[in-house]
Amino acid sequence: MKNNEVISFVDQNGKRVEAHGGHLLYHEGMYYWYGEDRNENYYVHCYRSKDLKDWEDLGAIITTLTPVVPFNKGKIKHNLINTDGTKVNLERPKVIYNKETKQFVMWMHFENGKDYLDAMAAIATSNYPDHGFTYRGAFRPLDYMSRDCTLYQKEDGTAYFISASNDNQDLHIYRLSADYLSIDCLVQKLFIGLYREAPALMKKDGIYYLLTSYCTGWLPNQCQYATAESIEGNWSELQNIGNFNTYHSQPAFIFEHNGFLYYLGDCWGGVNWEKIEEFDYTKSCYLCMGFVFENNQLFFDKDKE
Image (tube, rainbow, N blue to C red; front, side, top):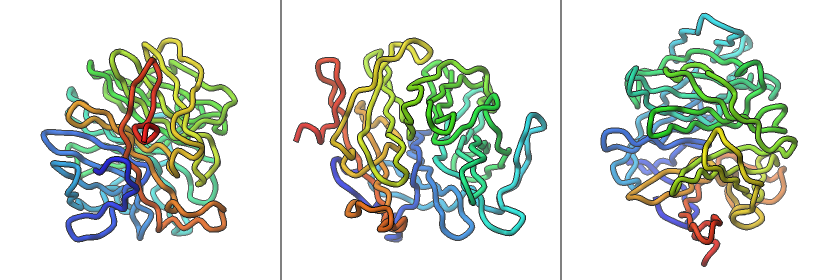
């Protein structure tokens, strides 16, 4: 991945990478990039790379035909296609590996494809990082609404699910069960009434940094961040990072490479549109930037150019 550059990544065949709102997992010497693919009957696409430059297309790993084995608990929706044959929406897929169960666990945002009223979290699991996923269903965490989301895994294996709730007004942080397949408890309600979405979390020198965007649909806006010494502790007030539209991007995920942390943002509809009627999903691309930690403040390296 190139730094400070808007990129339309391509695979080994020169075809555009379709991995929007995604996540990067490093496992046994390989980087796996998961993300949304809205083409054909696809939902989640997967790519892999040894160097973050050359990407191999591993295909769509969640589709309308993915096997479904729903949980036998709670209020679960298990359909991957509507009764009228139209697709549902599965957004912002995130994958982490559970060393104890030896399973790859994917959490996503589920909607029915017609409106955004379901507001559910969805789960899929596999014994492999790049194929063999089974869809386990969608539900509301502790009966709360759940939209834009991310996962974070601590060094000790504790995992957290973070999602926009209460019609996007608030951001919730949940601690996951030991198998990562359910909610253990709600540990934080953040940014009450501030309409923050697209969460991405990282840790640097003992401090957690949580990046979010404001809710403006597909339009980019000012990214902000908050800090804490503990995920379950007290969080700071929000502070700006980047310019007024985060350089035409919205947070997708944060990843580490060679000891450095990087931001990967979605440039929904490309970078040259300003009106929603001009939006074209097929022109969506990506922006990669590094971070600068300076005087207890966070910057993108692009801020310093």
